Image (cartoon, rainbow, N blue to C red):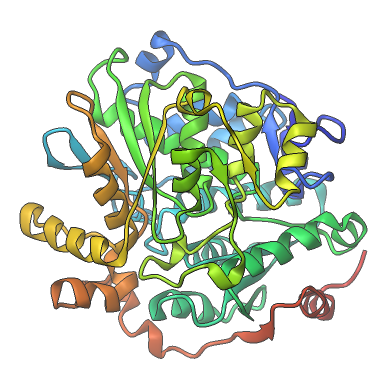
Length: 465
């Protein structure tokens, strides 16, 4: 399997090369040259597999430069019940009512869905770096959960350093504590005086400087890295198998969305042949994606117009992974994709072509998520975090009769105590090992939203090759 840039530049590459590279040389994102197809017989054969076995089957369709035995071992080492909250199913499906489910994705070490891919990514990095005798310096940006998931997955791993950018003061106290309390020597937290989009822009700018990127051995863990998105494809299949009895049934998914990586994995699963009726994109007040799916207009907003909300991990106005879907929508026309994503915004007039991919969307506000958190507790006896509440609110608006709707859980409520107290008047429970995490010693460097300052910090901790 070869991988190509969404912008059409450069030569085809193999999986292990793009694993360590992240962003393509022309500024685009990597996509496989084709999506492997699964039919009813394949779905039937996969039904009943363990999560690790299912991950191996799906990943092996895309990865042919890692020996099968090694890839299987990496999947088995990663997706173990003891790593994911003692849950043998890894991503168990919770029924709220007939036709409405929550797929649990937050049983990992940092209580967020990002663990599902990041734990595997850490194992893949360590494996490939060991094979090559190389080191990797990971530069990432986080709006809340990516950072802690990456750092917990990479801490102590041989040959890896992590430099994680986050928006200063814009994450919950719990999210900050999860990241900043890690004192491992290979973990570096940089809090930017800005918003997530500023951090993401710096990561892209550094990644686009090929000479610097190569001399400092820079890689990425954000969902611009194809390997991370690929790992997320697995839980769409896992959810489908739990919600259905045969490959003839269809389901829909509602996905709380900011950077479009999570729902883009659903797009890949649908393109492979998984019987998905709808992929519903749920946004918060930063509703650039909802605007696109309603009108065809994609208009990223400046940092000054990106709202700070009570679902902070979705406070994003430039959805990096959106380029992958647009590449498919534009028929892999690299020049057209490049023109679209190097412009301030763009318009797609053929909304029917967009909706042919199964997408729908909706928007949620602070008042909506508080009401949905209360509703879910009162009606179903279950607590959901603010981001999952955004998804549930939109799912209730978009679901269709006779088609099961699966809402993807994004995090556990414990990560957002302030909003949960406002919604239900009580502090959500948290795992015993995370009690008092906010009081632990912290190590973080606060810096301006300046690319040169980030480079200077990296240079002070990395020897050029």
